[in-house]
Image 1 (cartoon, rainbow, N blue to C red):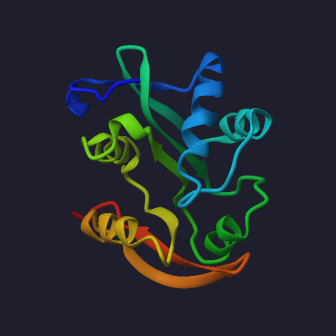
Image 2: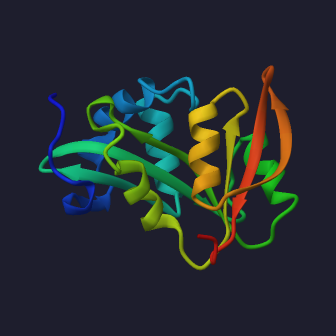
Length: 164
């Protein structure tokens, strides 16, 4: 892969296809400092129950992906459960990952624009991930609590639909 020169706003947003699974797993595994690990089977199950499972396609190269879950999903996650106990109608952003070759080129912002709709978006960020904390605050996400999970503090964020 080579660094892209295609602007993110000219890339195509589309649903994750079965043929994308191996590449999406590969991209996920490059970002374990910010997301949990996934294998192909776990990803296929996650995509099946997802509210949105999207990639940003750069002429056949996957620039990044995002997966959200609806309220009331059957999902074994302490972070998801934390929001389920506190929010009524929202979208849970399980993960968003940008490929190494497409970072700092607007890919994450483009994917966020696709999922930020008429419901609050809930997500967590590891407290040591300063770049992600700053990015989410800049997008209008507000911290609403903290949760310890596997020895790591997660900052729990919610973005209201009208946040700038």
